[in-house]
Length: 334
Ligand code: FE
Image (cartoon, rainbow, N blue to C red; front, top):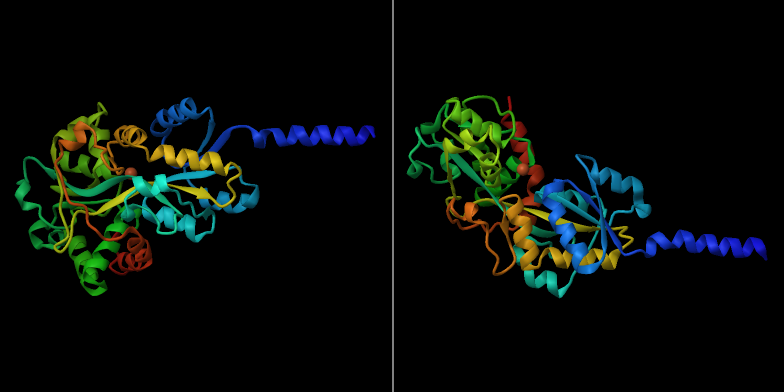
């Protein structure tokens, strides 16, 4: 009998961690963005939040861990990364009235495999000294020879560029997009290199006049003593597609296929789309909240308003491979 009692006691001990009120996150997003939210969530619900901050390999890790993965939710940016997680089979569909009511249809998977939390626009940073804001109109116009030797951008194979190229394919088809991409390449002041902020630095240094970048980097640069000069040398301009709006992408969340704390994970997802959490999350990185009735922070609003392109994010994810192939065909980074 003794061994049996011991075994039962041991089983209870082992079961205890799984029964604790907690939720586990894998995040590509920075601690300073998530911390205010996880703290508020714990305060509101008593559920402890454990976060593993990863730099890369999230999908591979989830696949390797399989059904034993401790992760309940994954946090990342860009539809391509969310779609890659879904394609790898490491997510599960989640639906709830709260999520549906707070996340516009354009910003979540119809099956609930991923849910957008914030948006960011891919815009043009333009030299205050050398570019009149009215000169920047459409993404198509970036291939116009008037920009020859004046454009800086990051790699064509980066997810941010690939998503923009995918949207161009959606609007104009592959042939026209290849021509456009070649035109933009011909206008580059230097080979694609560095991140979005490095392009603004190049404008500040006089190497080029305009660059492509995400909106929130303006906020980040304005809050960095070294980069504030770069930020102050440019205007934030919102180009559109000729037959559409301004290109936007999302940051989002998905529930893992293994999710050991499914109920708590759903509570956290619903908390994240509440108007209060939405504004905290969006303001922390100068992004746009997406729940009805929420507003971007004053600095972000000061950059101006825009109409988001209505290309469905699933469409962008589906055109990703085609976009990457075109980038390689024109040897955009070469
Ligand atoms: Fe970014």
